[in-house]
Amino acid sequence: MPRTYNQQAEPNGAKTLSDQAYLQLRSDIIHGELQPDEKLRIEHLRTAYGVGASPLREALSRLTADGFVTAEGQRGFRVAPMSEADLADITQLRILLEKQALCQSIEQGDDAWESRIVAAFYQLEKVEESEERDPAEWEIRNHDFHEALIAGCSSKWLRRFYGILYDQHKRYRNIALSTEIPRDLHQEHKELRNAALARDGKRACDAIEQHIMRTAEITLKVLREEAHREQEIA
Amino acid sequence: MPRTYNQQAEPNGAKTLSDQAYLQLRSDIIHGELQPDEKLRIEHLRTAYGVGASPLREALSRLTADGFVTAEGQRGFRVAPMSEADLADITQLRILLEKQALCQSIEQGDDAWESRIVAAFYQLEKVEESEERDPAEWEIRNHDFHEALIAGCSSKWLRRFYGILYDQHKRYRNIALSTEIPRDLHQEHKELRNAALARDGKRACDAIEQHIMRTAEITLKVLREEAHREQEIA
DNA sequence: TGCAAGAATATTATCGATATTTTTGTAAAT
DNA sequence: ATTTACAAAAATATCGATAATATTCTTGCA
Image (tube, helix red, strand yellow):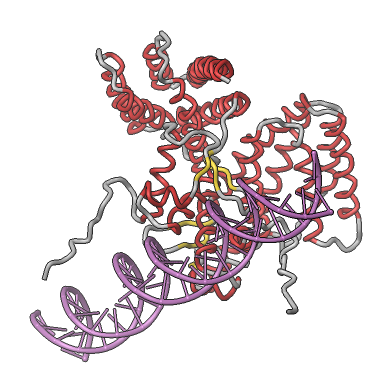
């Protein structure tokens, strides 16, 4: 008998096809492979992702609840739009939540929390100081570092909402990623690390606010330039 | 041929069967008809709600993203659990967000915003001062009033997250609803209204914090009593 | 006899194929 | 030009097949 070692498939945390589709779609939206406002035709996605309609619809439903996709009555799904106003909105709220999470972490964080920050920062530093920075690698390390900072926060809901906003923000950031603007990102991260380890809530909050604001400003600038360029074409 | 006034069915805002199932399930969870941790068997729900498996799965997927339902790998769906810690978590974050939304409203709100508050308060007052208070009616009016207060806030994301937390909180509140605890709720609402209309951000924030905290404390107390009673039985 | 491990069975979740309904695009007619 | 009728496309829902999980029953051993 031949047999069927049951593929086991994806090494990522995808138990079902629905999960797989969800993660892939989400990633493709965040990374701009699926453009804002783009129509998501089930028939087309079926072939593209190699799954049936049912798991796809489930994935799209979840993405709708996450705000990455919009669903309109009987007229299917679209990639959620992007706008300057939305970026400003996300930025402002992310600052509020990350500050809050950071403060709680600083108050409640234990030794393990500190260790994790040190470790995450070290890995991030390696990437940021190396000559040829791999953007994908940096993405992961940057995410790990920010996660580590707020890992001491005990609020599940705060972390959940923060996670959504982080990824929403990432979508905007990725668009601006092409253009390189000089900026001492590493210095900002270092200040953040030190403030956290010194258990200085005020200082850490200021640092994180500056950090997020600066990222958002650069993103906004690039966004405007692109919008401008598109207008010229039209 | 006779027929088919195409049911048009639900007068609520449900365009598709999936939406219908979503709204109904959501409501049933919030109102405790579906108990925490209860297994949600598709086969069973199919007959109960009179829809097929696919729209049900979509609805459950969305509810999972909203945090009303948990999904585990290949083992189906359950109603999200409830706990004291979760209530505390929701309460704290709701205070943070509603304060923020309220402040923004007070800064940005126009005449229409004021009018809406006055109107919503008036309707709420009618219910609260009537002899036989219909809880369902009060729910709606209370919700309208809180919505009106923050309607001036321009942040879509803030309102979205607030909405989720409000409903999550409502789930806890509904459980405690049976027990009546004397409390001058109406006075609290009046203070809230006046502070908002006076454009006094600080005062309004204090009022809302008190208001939410008090509700949460009563809910917590009832929750503890129930847990205690259950232990005695076992 | 009691208990644990393993096999057989039943249940349930998941997925893809098909059917139905709704929307959309196009062309004719008022 | 606007509206109406029709055809094509697409979204949504139902159904049935498959695969995973839970449960029950047996079997082996102390």
